[in-house]
Length: 116
Image (cartoon, rainbow, N blue to C red; front, side):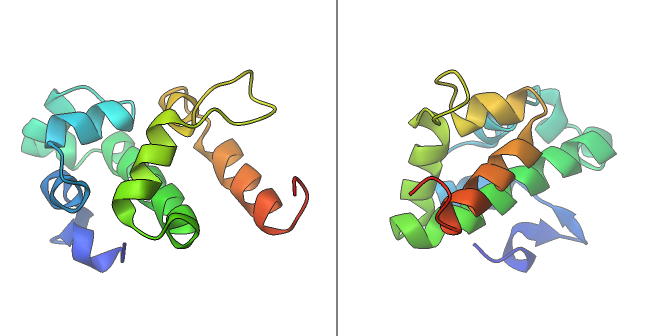
């Protein structure tokens, strides 16, 4: 998932992310911990919070895509796989709580063999 192909006018475009993941913009918003308005109203799409959450979602999916072979499989992992050490929470649940950095650190640690 290349960052540039999911942008429109220098901003992450929820519709482009949704198309790649074969889902809706509303589902992308939910997966990133955003309300439906965040992806429907232009002023909200441009907000720092919306753009940060979309960037976090794309970053996480990019980091694990190679492990799973496709954006769709990476997205399924993101939504459903409980992470050890996080009380059984999924990456999506952690991102929705504003803990995307912890998910990215976990992925880096696994890649470095810490949890292997």
